[in-house]
Amino acid sequence: MTWDDAGRRFDLITCGDAWHWIDPEAGTAKAARVLAPGGLMAWFWNSSHVEEPVAAAFGEVYAQHAPEIVWVWGPRDTTLLCRRRSG
Figure 1 (cartoon, rainbow, N blue to C red):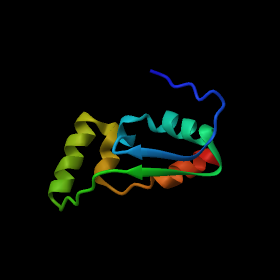
Figure 2: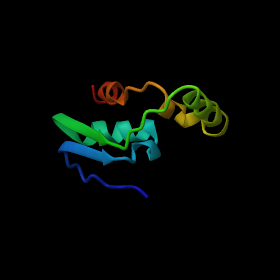
Figure 3: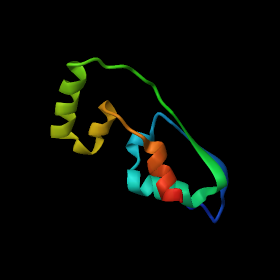
Figure 4: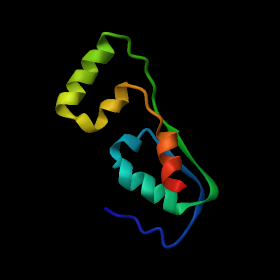
């Protein structure tokens, strides 16, 4: 399914516990396109702290079966990714 922004711009985009379902390249490109100058994006999600060695075990499973989301269990900075895309 696609969404037509009809040329609209937004001061704020929010995403509640779902950004991981969105293709990072397409999602950041669309967010950059529809954000007004100075606009913000806010992500909200459930957070849990996973201790080693469990985090490493999760990472191995994700690396084998879903390599596109290995970063879920490690450091991430999607803010910088979105800022790079929006200029």
